[in-house]
Length: 248
Image 1: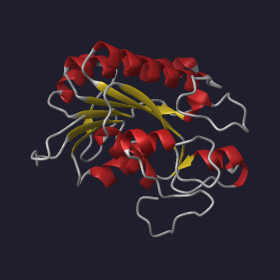
Image 2 (image 1 turned 90 degrees about the horizontal axis):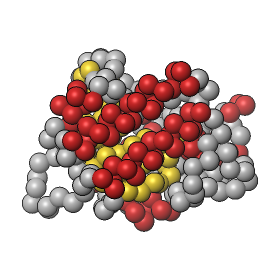
Image 3 (image 1 turned 45 degrees about the vertical axis):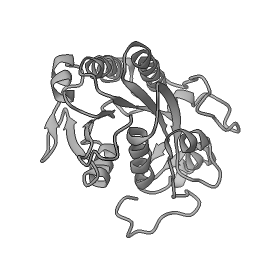
Image 4 (image 1 turned 45 degrees about the horizontal axis):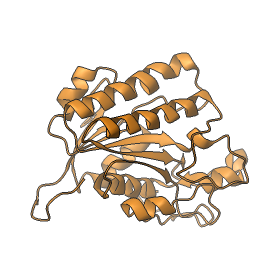
């Protein structure tokens, strides 16, 4: 999405699922940079109500937006199909259709490394790897990527699908601190940087990118994100951030 250097007005960016953990980090980290419209099915403070399965409501909310960052979903990898199909399947289609109808220049879709979680544990996954989910949740994220490809092929809306890794304020500990989880970790500050780059970076059509921190041993490579959108992570699961970092 290109903008003239003379255009001093901030981007108008709609975030769905803004009440979630990632959404909260994005609103805290990007509200000074963009004209943010934070939405969620659960309203709180500055977060407006939006049912992402309601295409007409989405279209009205997206009108005039420079970008839509779609986070709203059931985020539980062990969730059943009955719990996933409405938010993760119907919701993605409604948001995508509304973004096209509203002529939104850039759509950012939150995919997940769960979309490629069935590859061998000792193999570093690339953003160009085809989806290979290990659970139904991961399959719904593969669906989101397919919908993104359809949007880019069917409209002038460019799409970035982000395979977001193990999002947590601190690297995983205890039984969760497996080599793969540590290698897939993404800090809140790096997630903010990832989404900033996804919204502002030069993408002409459709791209799938991995979202992990600069971990010493990475489960997923992020070099394509560096090249395509200028993503510059700083955190490392093997060198945890300081406690006074407000976004980690």
